[in-house]
Image (tube, rainbow, N blue to C red):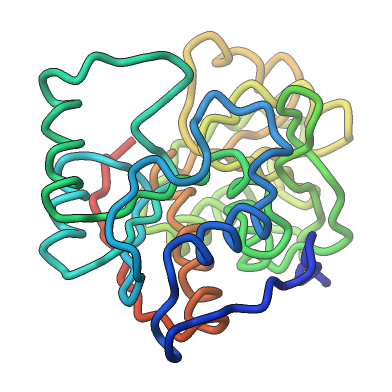
Length: 271
């Protein structure tokens, strides 16, 4: 299985020393590596808050909340990279919790960088690529439509498993008890679609591709009957827990490229 294809050439780092990178250099590298301009995403991908000019320590998280921002500041991070940011396609008044989040980052001189759909879709460090790799999926192909872009992956397990055994395997991978809708025509898992986060609406696409099972994050009531009517098993492993993989893989990539120390800030939501 090959998942290590980079979508853009590496941008040569220009660190002050190994382990120190000018913020603007790092942001430019991230923008290009993650292809932030490719996807029609309501999230404001890229640098959402600017802070200190030099990055020496990075924190990564799934969500941007007051807790994660304060945790990043307390850990001595210069940059927080999050999957879910503070802006979602509409202006927000700087009041209430939104003001508190911004104030926490600004007072700590903390940079905030966000990668939403680009990090789901990335072929090397993306959430779906990392899950597919952990499950040793073979014969990978694009899956999971997002406004004309395929951001997930479909593939085949090396050995067919019962639905229960597969759910137990996913639970060990994520640490989250899975919700299983056994709507499939077969009670086994072999041809699998992977779409992290909110992929419940992709059951019809899974059926069209001949997949027997969809692995995604959280259920939606309006899609409850889809699994049973389209004949596809669905394993829900948690929106949060299926999206911890990308930020951690991206941080490890930054350590390799720039020598930056990093820390994962774990603030699970249970959803």
